[in-house]
Image (cartoon, rainbow, N blue to C red):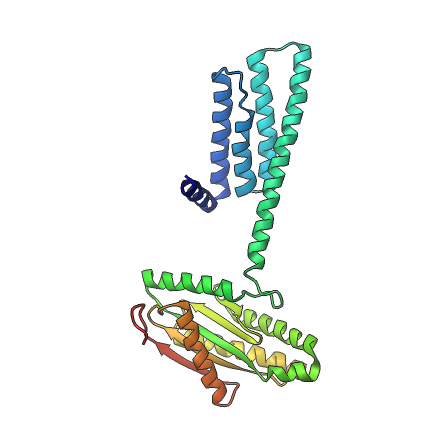
Length: 293
């Protein structure tokens, strides 16, 4: 049963807000109809929570508030039509309607606030706190998705591992505050050099990794040269003795795993450093899931 509920929630999360609103409207109409047609002593007010919770969680706070008013209003209208009460009973019913509205609003706002908090926590867990680019965890998830996409539809992608050469000298000579500023500016320069669909993540103290989806070796070289130029300009402007060594691999077939992919570009990056730093070491790699080429 729990698995079924989880699957339903996942399906709802993938729907457009308009679709969720339509489903909630249908549930609200069904609840009103059932409450009117099934003449039981037990009131159906609790069932109005379903569309309210649905919109508050999957659409947003305003939608939850709107359905709270709709739910309370329809509950009151249905009660008045069914009972045809006198003046005193109408006052009591209106008072109950106001209390019910307050309860609906409380539930709606609590759910929307919880949803927002969960999304903030999830986003924070995927972002490097200093540079505000993706962290290793987020990169691994995105890279795995790209590998899966490549396995199904073919194509190619390029991954580049970047290391800021002599970054330790910045910390030693100018202090860690300046070092942090260099990292932030470097991350901004990298992101500025990339295209909309490209991904950059900080994976170490002074190490970044870049994923270029649907990018062959020639296009990747153009992107990485632009990246090198932007980083060099930042370092010259700050008079910081920092260059960048880059190891880049273009995968013609999906790699065995994200870990194996990162290991391969890491080796290329160290090869670039060994060759004199401030260099780009690139390679085209053919490797399927079943082999480590």
